[in-house]
Length: 213
Length: 213
DNA sequence: CGACCTGTTGATTCTGCTCAATCAACGTGG
DNA sequence: CCACGTTGATTGAGCAGAATCAACAGGTCG
Image (tube, rainbow over all chains, first blue to last red; front, top):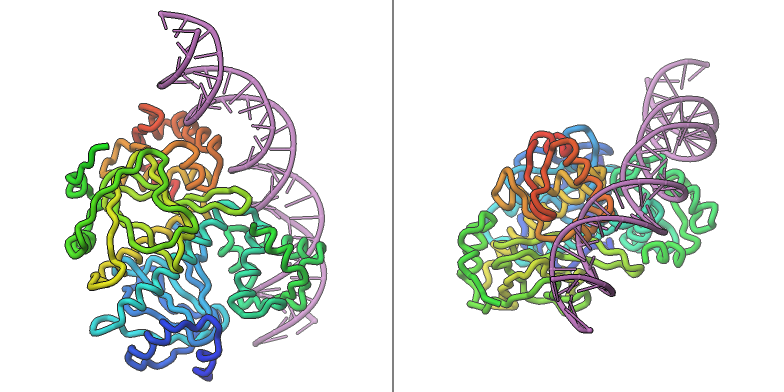
């Protein structure tokens, strides 16, 4: 349960506005959430935003009949927890052990412009994902995820999958069996290579990009 | 091409914060966009937000291979046009003839808090739709749309569909033939009645709600 | 070692897509 | 007024992609 605040400074997702925001915020302690730990639950009273110091967080929504949709993964340098109402309509969990700093913006002189920008970025990302879920087949969805992760991790050739197949499936709106089959398929086509179950080497980036045309 | 600013005051979607926002803005003229007219195009320079005085607007995204995803419909009282970057990643079109007021927020003393709230509401709505596209079948998607429209139009029994089948399909991530078939199916089950092609009477609201469980 | 969990693979089913025909509503021009 | 073309909506037949159900492999931990 060791905290590594130094991760924060080196991550490519780190944005100027986020830094501004952090600077203007009250210093708050970093809380470590082990794998699978709940950061907030669906229905909890909403309030402060959350900043990812390190690790990966999933934002999920559960329907009455038990189906789960993951609306976003957040990694180091990102802010999550925006809610329109006064309670959380989604819940947040640590995927792989994550350090979270609470941003106390309840009242006072928070830099609202920065917050607006962050909210809009969340919106933009969600809209992108909407396109993926609405108009892409399973192969294309997987390709989009791999490219997205590759970009966010700043590595053109190697992608780390901090989440397991089930999470990927619930993010892409498919089943985990289909995730397996598609990776198998991409492997057979020499588009990727599975160095490990959660470590994927991109052999043919163009092929992936073509799928996301 | 007659403008009816009085629509604005009576629509249920009208929120206090939107009113605040409007009050604080420079008065701007209302532009009328006839059916199918482009309000802004994908790739256009982004800037001011847009306020719907009356009518219905669709926000669309086109992929390289021509598939279209409608990410949102906006009706009277709503604000659209948030963009993370400096150009529009989606385009906006009038569905049925819409009156749009441009909100000049470029710089100056705009009420950033209100904007943030509006952006967050857009985000919340988009996340909801993500759940629909990711984890719902065609029937359930249609049911969700009908209930959503019913609520936004403030009428429990009658839903007006300002958009045509093609738009519904691209919003729900299915084909227009499937939209037709599902309406047929709902009609056969006595859940709805088609008073006209774009006028749907809800006979069994509970059945619809069960589908969205 | 055995229990369990995650991931992979196979067989079968089914939802929704594609392709295609038909129909109704509407506008235009003879 | 009517024949014609156009556009949007509906319906049908066949097919494909992904889900479901099920078996099995590998790894981890008690």
